[in-house]
Image (cartoon, rainbow, N blue to C red; front, side, top):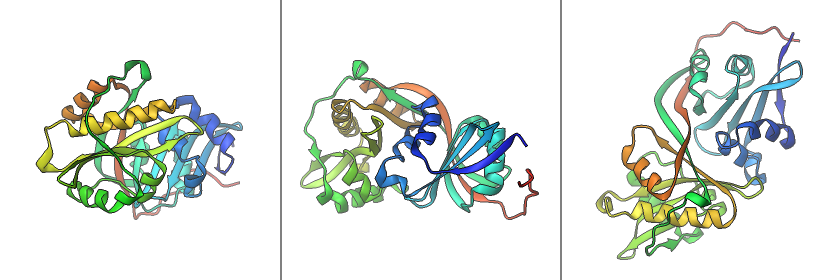
Length: 267
């Protein structure tokens, strides 16, 4: 049998594969940090002993986050047996969708761009912002309630970089990070949100600029995700100097109830 699957626990082995497409794999690489690694399950597909596909299941946010990288066909045995999550938010390349669809019913499928920003291309925006800390957790949560599905968890504030705009003692806009990996020099910008009553005033750009400036001062590579159809957000990020690195797909998936025939023999 030339194709096999194993659970991987050695960070060096995981990173040696992820680094082949470092910016696409930025979230997964960030999850190698000690505080997040304990929330992860990693599965690798191997041909003749060489890793050809990798799957990450991250359980630190509901629902599980699942990331795919590598040869689409080689993800089949991982999906067929190793990956046990019943419901998850998936991040994958467009070529992986047909394989995922054999095992999960997909909804909320979004075509996304991964954007990247280098120090040479950064165009900062000046303005009054507040550096947010743990004392702002409840105010952030209150603001994000206006956004519906913002994936924010308090640990992101503790471990990351967040800035906000205040008006009348009220937090009305913010930008932050999904995660920061200082070990692997990656910062992932996210959680960008403005209260509906304060949109169109440039506050999101201002907050994002402040986050990016701090990340770049730490010599990390800065990336973020944006929906391909969100032209306003893309223009915001391009104004700061971001450029498209690659397309990918996000989707919510529910494990299909039918019992699948085992696609690969055991042993």
